[in-house]
Amino acid sequence: MGTLLDDSPLLRFIRFARVKLRRVVLIFAVCWIVAFLFAQDLAVLLARPLIDAWRQHQGLLGAPALHFSALIEPFWTSMTVALWAAIVISAPTALYQVWRGVTRARAPHRQAMALPFAAATAICFAGGALFCFVVVMPVAFNFFLGYADDNLASMSSALGLHYKLGGAVALKPALFIDPYLTLTIRLLVAFGLVFELPIAIFFLASIGLVTHRGLWKFNRWATVLAFVVAAFLTPGPDVLSQLLMALPLLVLYNLSIIIAWFLTRRRERAMAG
Image (cartoon, rainbow, N blue to C red):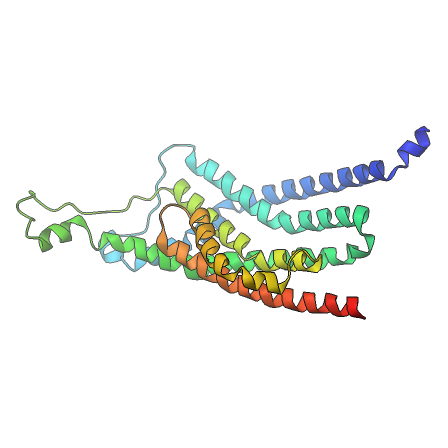
């Protein structure tokens, strides 16, 4: 009886999952340690869009600078940057192991899709983060730093209140490193997840849960949902970032309809034949 229980499919799957989980945790820990060694370089890289936008207003703002309010803040910021870098780097490996574990138990003939699935997921996430880093962040940061040009001093002068108010009151940014990097990482992760939409639609269409017909009928509501998702994922009442996220999301949704159309037609032809 003990031998039969030891050889049961459930116990074999649990042992297999335990081995895979230990492997994923080990890979994550190694990635975190390595990322921490380069955390300051990563922080400088993440600050690049802000620095480039700042230099466009350097005549008014002076040299770019990030501050910290607590003595331990730079250390914990480095730990946070390293943590997120480790999550992003180790995520494809974790997805690969999860896919192999699930297909081993439920659909062994699908195990060959594990590597393409993990690679496609990593590519889509990297594409979304790169789009945010190259397009969204420079535009958004330049826009918001532009408020230093339209400062209270110039507004009071334009209204003829410069002397009535007793002098100029200028707006000068004093940006702190932890909130800035938290904002940057949140934007990168949000755009990376949004760009995973074609992968999710591919998975749902491949198992027949969605079709291109249903997705096309939902297109009108998808437009509203895209702006709701963008408002939820982007930090604060940042309309510009929300718009720059919602538009790619709509493009990706319509691209997903094409993917679903291809998969649905192939499945219908297989069923007809």
